[in-house]
Image 1: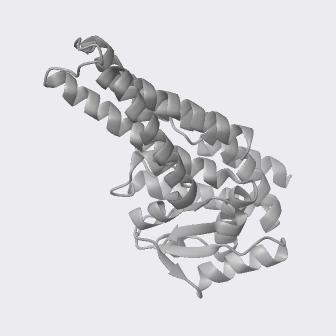
Image 2: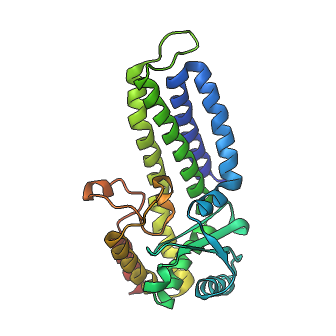
Length: 277
């Protein structure tokens, strides 16, 4: 378990404990701590399966997507991950799993409709770099814990609406504190995700360009994926898992993009084009 993962899990756990304390005092904090321990355990062992099930991904063992991943894994001496297809027309892809020996890569059906084989190779090389760098465990744990924090923040909001909780000393919990927590806790969780996601994407782009042999494969694919997702955003996306995709599946204003877990696609493409020179 690397330092980034320890820092992430610690920060998320502290947020959960704060939520529990504001809802139910010391008893609530203890419950939140236990809840956090269970969530961390589930995240480590089962978050990959949870994310794949969330998007109704189906494992494939043949076809163009499987062949591209198999070729990249073989040529770069990487463990072969499981390959999944998502029944979704909007083109996108992500990787998940706790380590390279228990990894999976997934892509939507739509990605095969708009990318050439070379561009698909660039996208899958990006995802395999996430696998090799062990970024995927961090991403899936971030998704699970952020969802738990958001859930507790929602509980705090409703507790405040219906009169607030009571601490162990019998006094009414601080309503203002719960209001602030209900607003800021999900934002804090998002900022933690941002901190670990943006730098990972740049590194995965660079590593993916090297794995596939041509930075322009990925650069061209990113341009197409960005346009497609802006034109027709992916429906029913859980915001806590949006950071896992190669390009953001969420829409938003230019202001909201400042808080995106993804760096600007234009900057990513520029870096890849610079590598190709």
